Amino acid sequence: MATTIADSGTLPTTIQGFTTEGIPFAYPPLAFYVMAVFLKLGVDGVTLLRFGTPVVLLGIVGMLYHLTVVLTDSPETGCLAGIVTGTHVTLNVFLVGASGFVRGLGFLFMLVALLGAYQYFANGGGRRALATATLGWGLVVLTHPVHAAAAGAGVAAAWLVWDRTPRGLAVGAGVAVGGLAIASPWWLTVVSNHGPGIFFNGAGSHGSMNHSLSDLQALASWFLDGGYVMNWPAVFAVLGTVVTVARGDWEQPAWLAVPVVLLVPPHDRLGILFIAPLGAVGLAFTYSLLTALDVDRLDLPDWDGAVPDRLTQRFDLPDLSAQQVVAIAFVVVLVGPFVGQNMVAASSTNPDSPLPVYADSDDRTAMEWIENETAQDTRVAVVGGASEWFPYLANRTSVIVKYGTEWSGGQTFDRHESAQNRLTRCWNASCVNATLGEYGFASEVDYVYVPRGWFVSGRGGATISPALHESMRTSDRFTRVYRNSGVGVYEYNRTRR
Image (cartoon, rainbow, N blue to C red; front, top):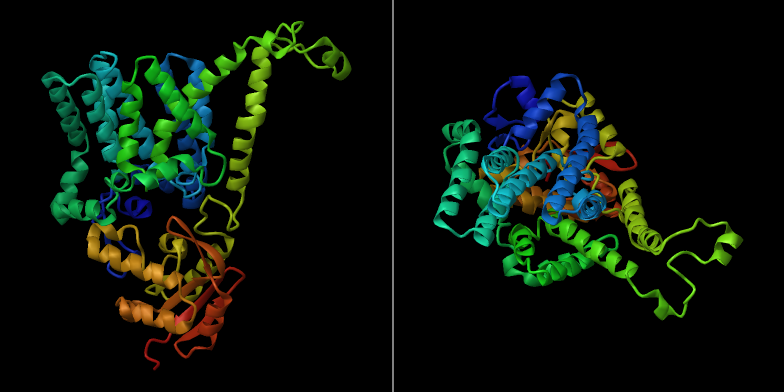
């Protein structure tokens, strides 16, 4: 998408390479324009996402630090929230792992809108807070639809929790109108190109809004289950909620929970809005509680909170206070393993890794071969998440894709999603051939691109059995034209019976 913008210099109507007809371009374009600038400067797209996304994540860490300081009036608590934000795998899996540059910018602008709304409705902020909320809302509308929905919910909840006056309602409506005005050059152009129905197509394809309200068990499971590493921040977030409410401030947890309840799951990354600030509050409270314990009850009447002299003399330890001992214990027992396990997860590309790598070195080698050895108009059915990377890396058409087709309507999206899911479960060549025919793709496909072993597909992983490759190799329907350790490419002989 960014390449198309960089080449044309304008807002495109269609993005070629995804499906044989291309996909209508109605996606919020701001992040793609940012990427297009770097592409025009000669930066490789993969390199841009590899290094640009962590930079955006650092911006998110800074914003959640600042938001937490505003909420708690404590820089120390803000630092804890920043640590949780930067190391929590639930957020990283959809930003760093999945090259989520666009999602990351949307998340960042969402935080700007929420900060402005809090400052205005809760702290009596004036024009500056109002301008911050309006600008943040406008930028997130221009960047990412899910985060725009979360920002809108957060602004509305801020009015509902702290204001509830007709004047406040009018101000909230003004924020909404102002943000839409900022984004109007984009959505007016899209409406003129495709009609207003395209936005209803996109909104109705995924069905994510209110998903968790119909499945509270899934919401609870997500919250309590770290997924890949120990989820102690969620435990402390519960404690932080209790502490905050006990102090007479129920509004903050209620406000932070609104976007999470509305959109998590399946948008797990939004949970950091609740977990980071309130988890930091819970952790800070626990730390203060432990350091304030009456140590005389431990039958150590001679210990004044420092490490005993006999230990410092024997092991040459520094003279540590009780606060320092508790802080070190927190780091060793909680923060250290949490960060360490996330680092291990981030550095892995095996089936146990939670961070999705949609196109690895084998994929890039195979796609380079396709670009060099096939005709420019070649159309390929790519199995798995690499289908999203294929048009950029191979410069050829990816026939069956999931994301992007939602703008063409729910039926088109379901057709592509179902075909992709069926292909990932095929065990023989007959299944692949039948799937292409059943979903109407047989006449459009020249080659089939099949991973070997485990690969990323959608939000999870799948495994291709060696039996499938052997079946396709011996089938009259397919002719193997390329293989490496991770990919097999087969020419599709659609006229064979």
